Structures are given as structure tokens and as C-alpha cells.
Amino acid sequence: MPKKYDSKIGQWFYSFFIVAVHFFKIKKIDVLKTNQIYGSWAPLIIKMIMSKPLMVRCGFVPTRNTNYGIVELIFLKIIQRLVFKFADISVVSNHLDHAYITNKYKLKNVKINPSYVDTSLFFRGSSEDFQLADENRFLFVGRLEEIKNIINTIDAVLLTGNSIDIYGSGTLENYIRKKYKNQILDNKVVIMGSCPNDILAKKLRCYKFYILISKIEGMSKSLIEAMASGLICLVSDIPENTNMIIDGDTGIVVNGFSVEAIKNKINCISSYDLEYISENCSKYVVENYNLEVIAKNEIENINAIIR
Image 1: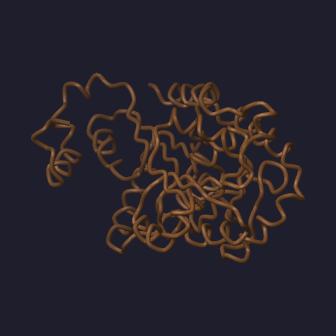
Image 2: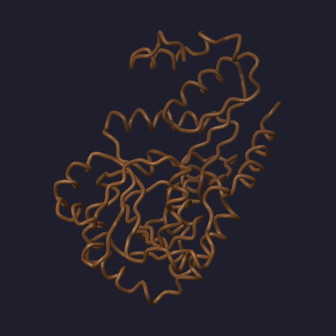
Image 3: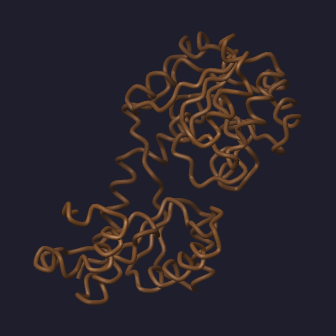
């Protein structure tokens, strides 16, 4: 984007008039693609003016998965309806979003192609490594926000006598630092901050348990990465999680969001066949989310709309 548009107003102007700014470059393009609904009006405008084929791909459908303010929600609903209506092909990451947009917008050309995980980075170590991983430290990776249910998660982990390492940041970070000041000093709660993917991939194999008790979730990339690494994943009983996690097979499902529900499930972890779950969840990701599979699907979807 040219520097002269590097402001909030400039970015909005640029998104609506990009076809005029880059007309001759856009003329050479064969296929338009957007990876999210927010901002998708830019390729939609180009399609309407220049009749270019458009692929709409979103990791999650925003009006189904996330809470917004009333004005932003109305705007997104309008854009979402238009972009799905005029797209030559729509691609979503999971069966839930597929059913939602197919039924809501009466669409026919909708495909499923999930986000990929680099399985050369995120992979399960040996069985010996799994046995040596720290059994008393849980891993959380994500935004420190209310919808992630992070406070109840921390409380439950501590009540079971375990510890938790937190990778991520968000609006609740300062609150967490104050509330768990003593536990942080005792190394029971550790806020690790953000971490580059290649480093995170190595760190994952030092843990045995990953926990994500979200109230609302899209298709969690960090969950899939943890599964690829063979971690035992404890997740909330919401469709976006149970679409991948089957209790006792590819992970462990917690029925409820309360401290008590999470604590009770942690206390009965030993009743599961952890070695089996570790092997099975890693295998599931390799078969369904590796780059080779996703890239093949992507090429097929592009070829389907090239005129």
C-alpha cells in the first residue's frame, strides 16, 4: 500500500478505490482472493468493475463466531451477504461454517479447506519424549480475553495443584499479573508473552497438556498445532472444538466453563489412555491439516473458477 494512504482514513479510501489506484496491475490478474470478510469489499468492487473471478476464503465466519457492536455487526452482515452472493467460489475452514453459509445464503459452490499446519515444525516427538514431558504444567496459547475463559482456566489448574504457562497477550494481562502476583512469584503461573512459530513449535514438545476452555472459538490454529505436536488437549464443549476433538480419542472435552467443571476434568485425566490420545491426535492433524493436502485443495478450487 502506498505510504500516502498510511492512515485510518487513507486505508479506508484505498480499500474502496484500489481499482482506480492500481487499474493496470489489476487488469493482469487472473483470480481475486480474499482471506477474510473484513476488507473483502475491495476485491468485490474489483470483480464488479472488471469481471474477475473471485474466491472468498475465511477461517471463520465473523457474524456466526464473534461478538460485535451493533453498527459493526450490521456493516459486516451486509458485506458478508454481498461477498458470498457474488463470489465464484466460497471456501470455509470447517463443516459448521459450511452448513451455516450454505443454508443462510442458499449457496451451492461452497468448499471446505481448513487452515494448514506446518507439520515439519509441529510434530509429535518420540514416546520417550512424551513420557518425559512435564505432567504438572499446562499450556495455554491464545489471546488473554474474556471469551477465552482464561481466569477460570487458571483457577482450575491451580486448584488441582498444577501450574500453567501462558503464551499470548491481551486486555486481561495486567489483571492476571495482579490477581496471581504470588503464584507468578512461585512460578505456578508464568506469562510467556508472544512467541515466534518456530520457537513455539520446539517449546510445545516440552509439555504434555494443552488447555483451551473458550466460550467462543473459531477454528483454533494453536489447538491444531498442539494436536500435531501430540499434546493432550483439554477443550470446552463447543462445536468448533468438538469438530476436531473427540473425548478420549483425539483429546479431552470439558463439559462446562466453570472452575469446578474444569477442575473435575483435570482431576480425572489419569483415567484416559493418554499415550493413545497423543498418537491419535497427531495422526489426525497429519492426515487432515498438513500443507500438501491443503495446497492441493487450494489449487483445485482456483482451477475451478479460472475462465
